[in-house]
Image (cartoon, rainbow, N blue to C red; front, side, top):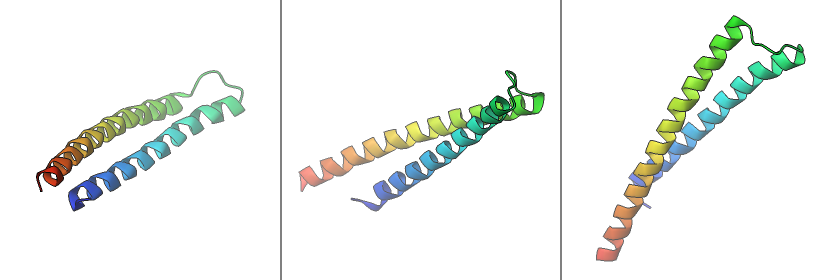
Length: 84
């Protein structure tokens, strides 16, 4: 496997881990409200929830970008191997 592909895969794994952390943080906000038997989030919680949701969307786009680059890089590597 070529070094560029290895780096892309490692970065994608890091982005995925970061996404999981963001999801856990967002869930924790909802869990606290639930534990306190509240149906609504406070204004501060709502703002944090929305910020985390936006960060998750950005992380999703980053992961999709890595997936596309990994696929393309893998195709190129396969074509190079076939040519030899």
